[in-house]
Length: 131
Image (tube, rainbow, N blue to C red):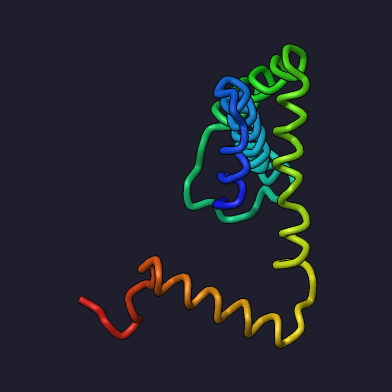
């Protein structure tokens, strides 16, 4: 996210930046919401801790289609840049999730993660400390 945020800062036109971010956000969240009816259809017996009437995700998906389709017609360059920003996550996913990592890569990644957690004070409470 930090790298993507720095890329956003290179845009001098605030309207274009709003279009990039808005399109990318709506498209990403829309795809995530699409999972709800998809899972209801493909895996109806899956346990669901929170049940939502399908009317709401379908309404949200219709709004997402409208909010993403109109900018595609009105400003295709900005929406294309938004799609490219979303697709920039594919190599990151491949390297850090899909690719079977060698041991030296895992150790280095864990060391960097622990270092960053300590620097930014995001280390959770230990499991032994209970109230």
